[in-house]
Length: 67
Image (cartoon, rainbow, N blue to C red; front, side):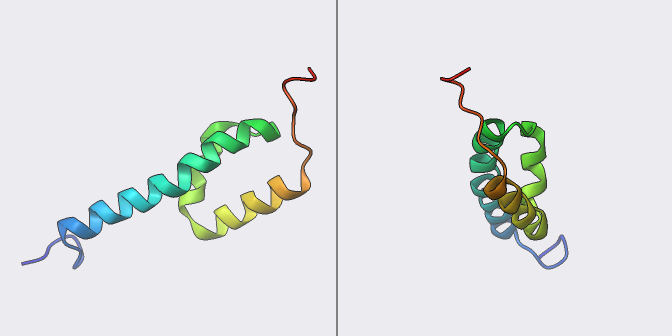
């Protein structure tokens, strides 16, 4: 019997893996644009990830070497 709304243990594991694959790149990139790293957690939601991509596309990147 499959619990947790029809998702087996493999499905939950796959969701965690895909979530990590989405959040980690945002976590690394957001600090370069002056956005707090914790905002990367919002990238789990597709609409939030799309909004973050738009914000990063049109915001100037902070270059640490020039500072």
